Structures are given as C-alpha cells and as structure tokens.
Image (tube, rainbow, N blue to C red; front, side, top):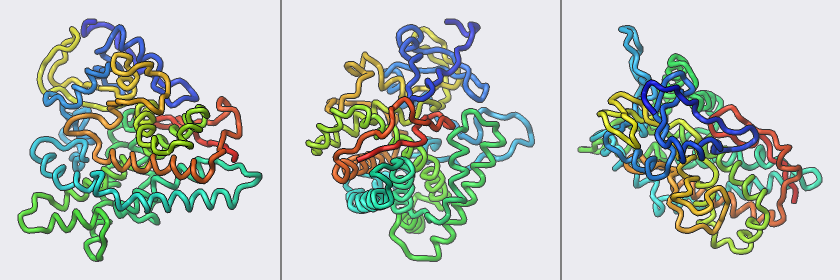
Length: 402
C-alpha cells in the first residue's frame, strides 16, 4: 500500500464481545502494517502481527508521546503539557524512576499483598451471598467492580473515600483516543492536581503504603527520585490500575463461565491457576487499542515507509491471537504453555503493575471457585448487557447462581 491509498478505520469490536475485532485476522494476513484513521481523527500505522508488535514496543526508534502533547499543537497559546506518566517517560528519566518503582511491584515484594487481597475477595463473596435472593447475584456489582479499587487503594495508598473525586477523570482518560485535546488536558490537569494535593497530605502523616515509600525515597540524600515523579506515579496508577483491571476481570470471569468444563477442571486442580491467568491475559484483551508510539526516524516495515513523526500503533489484542505465535489462538486453553503473550507490552515500558494484576486476577478466580464451586451463569450468555463506553468492552452485569 502506498501512503496515498485510502486509510482503513481502526477495527471495531463486535457488539456484545470483549474483542479482539475479527478484522485483525485479515490485517495480519494481508496488511500487517497499514495506515489507519484513529478515533481522534489522526492517522497511525497499525501493527497487527505478534513479532512486529512485540518488536515495536522495544524499538528505540519508537517513543511514547505525552498524552497531553499528542497530536502536537503549533498554536502559540497551546497549554503546557502535563507531567509524564510512567508510560511516557523516556531515556535517563525513565530509567531512574523505573529503578525506584519496579522493586515495589516485583513478585517477592507483592507477597505481603496476597493474604490481604484474599481477605478482600472473601469479604465481598460473603457479603454477596448473605444478601443474595434465591442464590443469585450480579457478580460485576458485588465482586468484580469493588475488588480492583480496594486493591489499588490498599497497595498504593489512595483514599477510598476520595473515589468520587478521582474516578471520573480516570474514566474520561480511558476514552482519550476519541477525545479532544481540551478534554484530555482537563482530565489530566485535574488528576495531577489531585495527586499533588494527596501527596501534600501524605507528607504530613506516617504510613507504609507505596506513596509513603516513594516520598521517603525522594527525600533521601542523593536520591534521583523527585516529588514530581511521585505525582506521576499516582496519576499513572489511577489511569492504569482500576477500570482496566475491573473490566478485564469481568471478561475473564465471563470466559470461565462460558467454558464450564475448563472451569471445573481448574476448580478441581487449583494449582493450575497461575497458568490459567496467563491464558486469560492472552485470550481477553487488556486493551483493544490504542497504544500510540511515534517514530523518531524513517524506517521501512513490510514494505511500508514509516516516516519520522508518524504514529505507530502496535495492537496486543491482535498480536495475542496471531496463529504464527499461538496454536489455535482463538480458543481458550487454560493449560496453554508456554504463553509469551504481550498483554502488558514488552521492553522497557512493559507494564510495571503486571505482577499485581496477575496476583489480583488469580486470587479473584481462586476465591470464587473455592467459595462457590458450583457457580454458573444465571442467564444465557447472549443476553448479558455490555459496557461499551471504552475501548475495552466488558459485561455491565454478570448474573450468576450457585
């Protein structure tokens, strides 16, 4: 395809599904690098194959732009960009911040959270079953929706009672690819102001949450971490740690409930939950789009000339269904191994919170199957209503019985 040929639209998810869009199968086969019309009217090169997407995330020629400064604005009165989130930091800045934050999210460091997450999950199940009528309930409202926010608040140190302040702005930013720059900036400025105010409160009190730990590090003599970096940490966790995890958990539980034989095997052999979690991360997209990278120099990929300044969009939801990388990729196989999915990206900007997401999802599944071993859908799967307000679609309700 030449640069002058018609743009393709970003493939849309079929109604009533989490995706990925079926159209990516054709793109992988026929147009693995194709210029597309993005939801905000800009253009970008969609990268749909596994090897290409994985390589793009780690390619030093491709950098993440500031969400508050892309697409670039040339007006003299353009507002200043916001602080970069962790996904947008580059070079030495990114390296020094990553060195400080990454240890907090390693498997061993997070071991202390496992019993806490289990307790939260058990309490939610107990509340759900105690208030249920006829041993039926909506799993989304009772379990899926509250758990990720409680985990985030407990780990990071976000006040749960402030949720009506910060959640509306995080939900706005999840639809950023289709928003005007003014809407994006308003939400980002609001989150940045909230994070700064929250950190001011944390500076006046004792605590052991991650905000307190990072603040202590920023005050240490010789530390490379700044207070602004801690503000960026809070904004990043608000944007990445709640709604996406909530929607993915809902989709993952729906996948289990619509594959009852596999779910029963997992219930009877819970030692396989770690492997099952990796398959759920591959099978259910954490994000259908949009991962914007910007080329810093010209290069050619699959015959397409990508020029400096072009947006490049690797699509994990498509890559994780690539038959060149995964056998029978459109089938759920909770015993699949190896499973080198790229749900969390790849390379220096691989999601810092990946292990926390794994721990949370694994604990949610384990507790549900332990407490309600006979759980099943209470309605036909095709009648379930869907929340389609963000790129990651998820069930709005999940009626179950036990």
